[in-house]
Length: 620
Image (cartoon, rainbow, N blue to C red; front, top):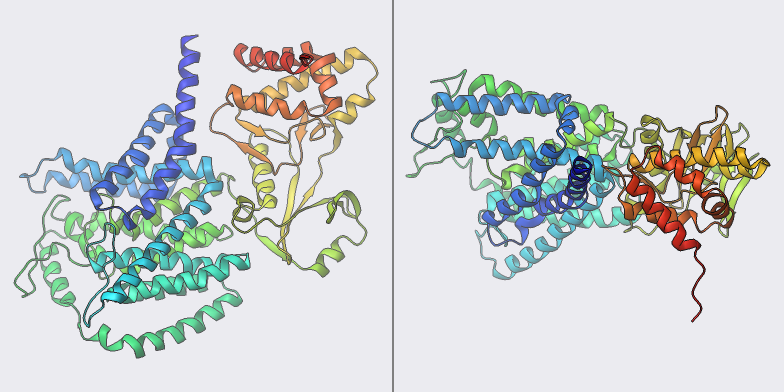
């Protein structure tokens, strides 16, 4: 009993971390620098709301690390971090070694936390990124307004919040410029496109106002990458916009960008190479200090190039995994480019690679602006790649379907279900089904995650869990904003139809008992099927149960709580025939089947709820 209670508590803690804490921590990681007074508070928020909760979650459920360790990008990261920590053996001995372990640990936990976030709250990822970008956009508008009011020749935009350096500020402005640039390429709804173009222009103006030139090169690389990875008509428009924008920037800001020369980059790089040549293979050690004076009277603590920084601290042996996980991130994104979020994440990584050519150098640091150039995009790519391979994310392209194409597809179809707006489910001539989903408002979850795509992803996940579901044949996007899923039906009849056709009470009772066991199996596996009723459960030809109409379904990290089981049960009690068969005539059989898989407390809870709902209302 104590072990069961401990498991239940640990599951609830794990669920709370994955479902609520990690999404909040990730959102603040992305946008909190825009409004916090300093970086130290940003560090504490990341540690308290993302890093430490991830560590607790992994301690509660160590098996979650299995998929992480099968990802080549994660393996290369661990090799890089391990080599960096090993380099402490030959690095300076005048600094405490214990504190040097924290930044690598928090970096690794960023990757692990992103994996858990995408695995258990994948539907929140796009809204989180979008919300962070909106917050960054609103803050940047304020920064630009204040900058314009106080502008004098030679001034460079720094911004507010925790920003204190125009070069570091340009990393975040450029990061979100790359985000909006990516949205212009992957957005399917016109509303997102209309917002993305001006938003990208605002963030780009902020980059220009910082006077930093490297982000301009990085954004150019990101745009070229987007043209390559999503080659379509928008790519041509983007190439044209790049040409016009480049001419405009050269004409309006050319003098400002040229007059600062090379900012001593060549001298810094030359001196850094001389220091690297002292220990080219193993580096000077992860905790080594760097001081370079190119003749300006003060020292630079970074070589202004991430590649040179890696060579200086951990040498060629450390550079190899560092180069590998970046190359693998881009390759994985290109190979799995059917997933829009991977296209977006890879654009952010290309921006970071471009910006890191002439900036940075600290290879592993606490959360700060440099994280937006490398670690945040890489962690997102790794998490998406792992879950994409596990079929927890969309794995097939969404094809456009014109009104003419829909009419041809449905020319000899039979209408199975319709509403006031027209057909909703069609049986096509070849026996397959086409289910239509009406367009949702652009700012709702149904717009970020269309129900047709949820249907496909849920079907794949349930099949992987051993629960029969329809085989998805295709996904479509219609001109009016609707979406559709094309699937092969399961061979069988609904449980409601089968029960209606049974005349022998004993046979019906046995079938209800089997359904009780199946329902408990769903609940114990964390499947919350909001539309669970006897019309959405099929009795297959082999006697097993299958599920249909899967768009309104979520899979939780652990077995459903008692309250969620009650909520699921209340939905079935709304159907008069279902209620009579399950909760009146054959309640004992249902409970007996449920008890075969579920705990006694869950069975008792279900029994109490049924009795309460069956009790006649009091007359006052």
